[in-house]
Length: 312
Image (cartoon, rainbow, N blue to C red):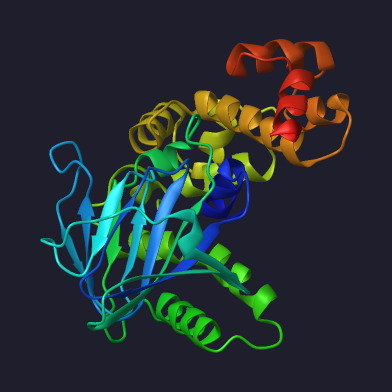
């Protein structure tokens, strides 16, 4: 089981929203916070990313070049500009054009051109998976020859499709944008030095914790105990429990409970199956016991949660 893919899928609440932004110097674009995670891909040219409130952000102004990718974990407000000194403005709704496969925005003067793919991934930030919560506020992956070839290839393919839309582009571009999130996070995790990696960056590659996580994700309904997970990890019960809690951020059975409830919530949002089947997949012997546990965790009965999610 791919824990990274499953963790992200558990938070997804919709398809990515994206727009191609073409700015000619001088230009500055103020972007408000989004309910999810933000991203930018520099297709051509150069620009700056500047936090809206540098004193409150965990990063300062970042210079971006062709092929660079930026991921903002919390979708915080920020500015994109040709130069940090350029005053930013907010784009008006009438400036956006719907042009398949995605919308477009043109701003600025008549100077050098910068083209970006800007957008957001709709993620449930009210209940983030701890893997995502442990990511830095901003991930910047500069384009360098030979570095992260799959990510670089995805960026090149996106640029080609947006520069020259053809038959099939309306299906290809959203799929590439969707895949970009996994490429970004894979690249970041792989960049962490093994000796210095901590938390989930270490857990996903740890020979003891990674198999236990995969087992939990593969079969959340199994009657997991610390002993049974420790056996899979090849460690004693105490050694495994300490190692798991240090890396994952919570004890093994607390994570089992979290993943069961996360799985149930995702099924309630996405699957048209009876509550009894969801209760079983979440490891509960009765719909009543599941309902009590779910309401304790989410503050809503499962049926109410499903109706609310479907109405959103």
